[in-house]
Length: 112
Length: 145
Image (cartoon, rainbow over all chains, first blue to last red; front, top):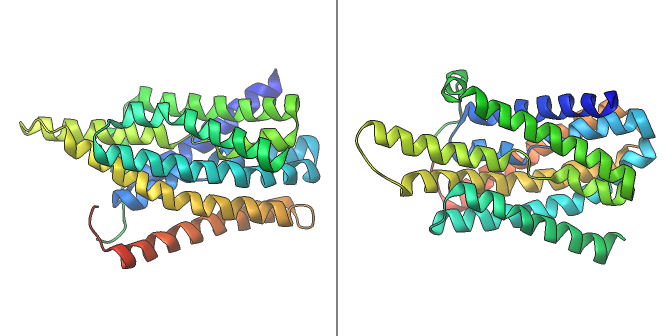
């Protein structure tokens, strides 16, 4: 339980830090780079290396390549839909399902 | 337009908006750890690239832009949406850096000190993302801020 709480606090802090950095920057397209900052990865990998070792964390990083490729598809779709006519909140949240479909597809076809 | 850094922008964000980000980030980090434990590192690793920052940020940008216009008496729904789309365009470019981050960690972690690997990987993400952003502005011009 303590471990979960620690993960929660570290993850929340790292994600908030990168999000705040993006908030402080202009122009918006540049600030947007920080929407894809390796925040969850930095929070998770450090803890994983300490708990399970480098080999285990390296395997996670290999899968992260597929996760990042799915993130690329997700962001392209969000950008297109927001530019056309849909509001940010529903697009960004519903499209997470697309990201999920992409990562599960890549996992089933390439990684498993 | 030059890159501009202003801490005062943080003052426009409400405490509950910061709280949502913190909770979301913490929850995803916990979820990634639990999934890795349950299904192994190959499946759990996918969630290291979960879009944890983008949804809240894009929503914030659209709302702030709309409120800014409403303050001067303009009811404009389009501008906020377009601003969020610009943020998304930056995020698209950032994901290219994220792929490079993952490759650096995957290829070097077992051979080099973990702290150094994470520092180099984060620098790689930043250099690639900024480089691609600059290249895209040279290629496609500077429409949109």
